[in-house]
Image (cartoon, rainbow, N blue to C red):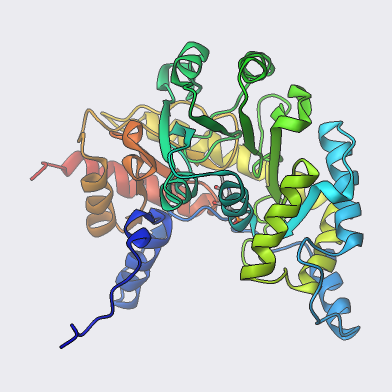
Length: 395
Ligand SMILES: Cc1ncc(COP(=O)(O)O)c(C=O)c1O
């Protein structure tokens, strides 16, 4: 007799998860029981999508733009993306190098799947956005940790990168501004990384989805500065910049033969990205920029508030992140087990945060807090954390 459950594919055991979604579900369950929860776990702007973008989607729907599109995206959007990349990265790209996907995450999965064979190695910053590692292991390739150092504002040592490269290394993942630490690559870092990449046959995936969330200095784009388009894949999208997480619109720029392979994966899975969302994305890329700048100014104010507040809590030390909308305070003097401490803060103080080690072993002893929340909520979260951490006795 067969067991009551049907066997899943072995590969499912190699697929990871994303703690932000797991903790969000737990926090929502507590809220349903009547608890007051401040959400600092999920990485999405709390702002509404700008009106002119919503209007473009509504116009598109009324024009019955509700049918399938080419797998790689409509030509009008790919043309707009090419112009955006030229404007923001200073690189001329052609539309056959561009693929549009429902969110940046499927774009990351598609390029990893298009390039990796079992046994290949992928150098991934540690800590990092979980999807890079998860898809790498899912396809049978091996993630290699590139430690980010708190003392270097969560940048890595170039010597460590060079020492991590083996004949099996196929891909290096970069993400600046960085999730979960808020760290950024400097132009000097980029020049040094580009030099290493030129000496080895490696493809770089540069995830620049937080490119418009850079605060203290202008954003330095690896895609723009490395000047190595045959060995670079740019990932970007609308989710963070235009507060469009739920719309699902991401894109990638890459050598045309990889774009063709990635589009084939999209064709075989989701077919294409929603037509009216693609129309709205054109408005995002080409329309007025004031809303984006206003969000950035507000994030900067909140970052300063949160960093200052965290550094006042005994036992907590927090670097000032240069970008994205996360802080990554070191809490190891209070509790080295960051996941335990995150659970404690959720259950005792009603503050939902993520344990740093859910982003990789080098995140141990840190928490990730998103400041995509109101100033009032951030102040309340700081007050609750200050009290709860003072009362923390371990277990
Ligand atoms: C570094 C990074 N890349 C990609 C994504 C995915 O973005 P999207 O919502 O467009 O799939 C995220 C989302 O949190 C992210 O933090």
